[in-house]
Image 1 (cartoon, rainbow, N blue to C red):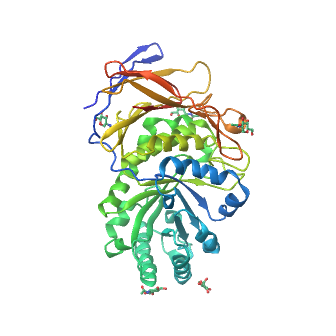
Image 2 (spheres, rainbow, N blue to C red):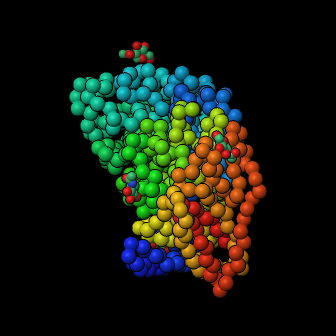
Image 3 (cartoon, rainbow, N blue to C red):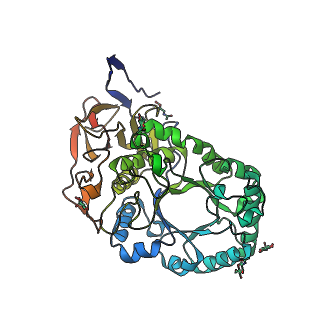
Length: 447
Ligand SMILES: *[C@@H]1O[C@H](CO)[C@@H](O)[C@H](O)[C@H]1NC(C)=O
Ligand SMILES: *[C@@H]1O[C@H](CO)[C@@H](O)[C@H](O)[C@H]1NC(C)=O
Ligand SMILES: *[C@@H]1O[C@H](CO)[C@@H](O)[C@H](O)[C@H]1NC(C)=O
Ligand SMILES: *[C@@H]1O[C@H](CO)[C@@H](O)[C@H](O)[C@H]1NC(C)=O
Ligand SMILES: *[C@@H]1O[C@H](CO)[C@@H](O)[C@H](O)[C@H]1NC(C)=O
């Protein structure tokens, strides 16, 4: 058992938290992730927005390359997916990364969907999977697919199975459907869907969830970025991921971001970048294979990683998370995910190579509180660190409060990294080293 010491004294209204101590397990502990995928962090584009991203937004190519260079070992493995409609099949066919094609089920025209799927299969060499319907948990009895009946979980499961059967039968193919595509886990769930899959499971490539922790209107940044609240928010997906794994299939978050409706006022902030880092790590530990962060309409997209003119703060989180995961085989939580303070050990083969520390206390003004993390069991004599920070959790690039990753920023409009790389070197004494991490900051320690 690793020891997380947390003592608190109550002085009036002020709680002082002592240093946290985390022994670094010399090999992946029992609660480490499974083998990590090569490119767990991706982006998803809506079909209508994708051409403009490629043609009008100069930053797109470099922003994607920056992430790929950190994580992807072979170029066919790019961490990007596109959800496309049939009119853009030819553009999808030219795209270098893997393509997830979203086809319609709600309108109940199966011959149309089969025609599109047939064309896609022949034209798109990088076709990764096909979705048969987007977020069917929102369909209603007045949608054509419901045939004037209540659109229940049982109705959707039966419909998904019948469509998988017909589409894969006509395509003479299997292992191609991204199934479920549910927003959240209720009333329809991957647990429920997999329980009724039998033969159809052969058609399934992966099981897909969409997750947006907050709603634009009521979004709360402190809550979004809280380490313990992230743990509770994603807890319902543990059963979804297990259900997929029990069928021998991967789970993906095919579409995700901070808040619904294109994002709320919290979505362009540095706090959302911190959320992204911790959310990715916790989701990978739960066992998901990939998270595709949704990029919406250019010029009207709060949570977007980049736009035509300015970078978005969340991109710094994606970049930092990709840095933490670069070359990694396993990640393990060192804390119990009930406090604001996260520590993760990151392994290459069976050896610890990095530690990620996150102080999720919400910081917006005044003196910045800090938290001390002590790591023990380190064999190196010195370690180096890279810091992810910004003036406040509420900082936004377009307001001039640029985040920095290891002292560097991304150039507006082009996404090239700029500035001098800043790393700190710290001496390890008796296998032990301590770091002070400010509220709303994350630190990556290279062992
Ligand atoms: C279904 O799609 C086909 C094209 O594949 C089209 O010819 C037909 O009119 C559509 N049916 C309905 C009811 O919209
Ligand atoms: C092809 O799709 C149609 C529905 O359009 C379905 O009735 C038929 O069974 C499918 N064929 C195969 C071989 O699955
Ligand atoms: C936001 O959530 C935090 C808990 O994380 C709570 O203390 C705070 O009151 C909430 N703020 C608003 C405006 O609801
Ligand atoms: C993971 O295991 C360590 C012991 O190796 C324990 O201290 C920690 O609380 C656990 N965390 C979770 C989230 O299971
Ligand atoms: C990006 O542009 C905004 C103005 O829209 C500016 O405030 C910010 O400082 C710029 N960021 C960088 C890294 O140059």
